[in-house]
Length: 94
Image (cartoon, rainbow, N blue to C red):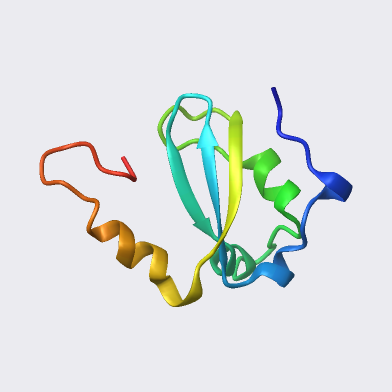
């Protein structure tokens, strides 16, 4: 089932300090910083642009199962996730 967005989704320029957490149908989930997307030569304009073209780094497919827009002031999310990493175990971003 493809995620659907209202009116082509939120414009990325309005959520600059956010991340889009994307989960693939294979189970891999990872954040994408909106600020990084907007710094590209040809940045996507909306969340819909990102979600419909996101390719999984694990399986290589374009099959977004779900996504979530998360506020991330000054890298707070990355700092919080560092405590969730376990040496030799399954980590959040694996």
